Amino acid sequence: MHQHAHHVHRTDQEVTIRVSGLHCTNCALSLEKHLLRLGAHAPSVDFASGRTRFTLHNSDALHDVVDSIERLGFSVHDLSRPLRSHHQHILTIKAAIAAILTAPLLVAMCLPSSPLHDPTLQFYLATPVFIIGILHFGASAIRSIR
Image 1 (cartoon, one colour):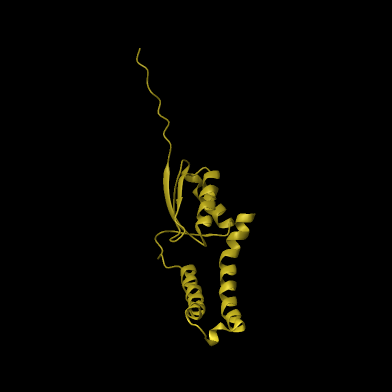
Image 2: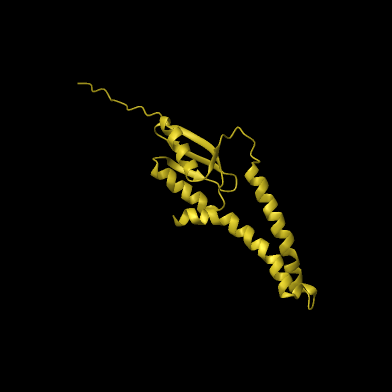
């Protein structure tokens, strides 16, 4: 007797999207865990570029996956759009401001005496850098805590 093998044909879909709003590697890991919970296979998230890859066994679920990523507070983009996003532009400006304000503090460490040693001046230089850091990482920290 000859038995026929029955093959179950799945419609696996490899998905590559760009997610903006990722602030750190912890955001990327949280997104990978979220995708696994949604049934995605082998998720890979690069927080620097936002490039997110995963495989779905049910290609019809892609719309729901994108919706749930956006409910987490991230934005999903098609890779066909330019990679230089508004988010990256703002991040560059924040980094430049922080670097400009931090430079005098680093210079002061190398000088035996300088007006830069004044604690009040150091406070005014360091506070905006601290606020930029809190605003940048605060949202992802609160999401992680939840």
